[in-house]
Image 1: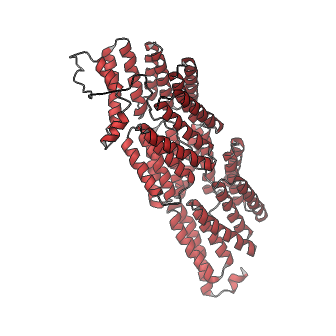
Image 2 (image 1 turned 30 degrees about the vertical axis):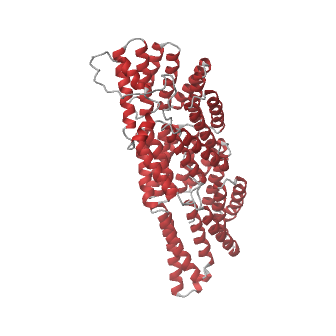
Length: 564
């Protein structure tokens, strides 16, 4: 204050303008994005530098570093934050130093250096206590909870998130409270507690919208879209992800837009629009090319490309992409990501009819998913394990595995996953020569799907039901079901603009047409249904990939790096 009083009127006006620019940057970060905020903060830094205002320079440097952290430019964030910390400590500004150290800790955490992050959060906490910075203390508590979550101690993480939330609510701090709620939603989603996750996300979204904070609202919408995907509500997932993408296209960061496009591709593929999925994934990969994209996002893009390649029966490409994703996830120490890549390798082996090797790979993926606490992923992998066991002849083991998967998916409330489990059990009963039991299971799967948009699962259920009806001589009814299966298949293949891709998608599905041809009464009412000319086709018992979706929880939300 003494220095401010000694300044000339022009210098005082310049100082007030610099502070105003810094606060404008804080406000812009929420509604206009990182680039707009950085513009204001750099202008503030320039004015403080002309004034030789060390305190203002340290605060602006910290803001710029926090902005780069939000935009996932970690190297730039580290440089600015280190300068902010050094300058703040030199002038004894412990509050600004604590803010800078807290965000530096988050940088270390994002790089996988959990020990370094813990040490920095501890240093920041010491400074918060000395300065009475309750906002910073809540921030550190939130971020330490993220480390506990990463280490798998979800109880400790939940307790710390709740503590940070209570502290922020006590002081009426809506913005960090919303971040705490987002993290609690992510944690509930990881634990497959979908109702709790939805409630937490809804609270966070309401707070962000009330503040006009579009960027953070987009993050919550992204997470809601992933939650909808896990619950099999693809229409809601499309709506939430599309809203998030629209915001990020206006505000950035580009990295967030890439991630949303990748997840949109997954949802669009689940709805049967493979062409739309290819378009979104191509756009995501073009945006990522030449940018400093986080390793985890590059791994996720490789995984998505592999999943699509598997659906197009491009098995060598799928194998290569799954291998690439697995290597990147291992570099990150991301056990859940490694499990997802391993699951993909198992899918390829199933498609190649290497059933023993497929079971081995899938059991490894299931175990890794269970150790990571990914209950839904583990249950879906169990379905694949059940198929491998069935095709190598161990029907008893397959039945046990599939029933266990069904129980888990029912407990989690995943209707699309349940329908897939009913289909797998129906296939098993049909193979065992019990068509009536198979019919009941296929009907249960279709009933569980209801009007949900999941053509990859629906056509397989209709196909199985048609085969079961045909096996007991109910040819007209079988023809109806097989026709429904073909309609579903052609709805998916019809979205593809390139003939070669349509042929690749249908390459392992010609038996649906053959079964229909054998089910039509000659000259009957259904005789006009067109079937393609076929040279070869796989046997009716071959396994087909119905594109089960394995969404992952959204990114953890680190808070406290924005400055005040």
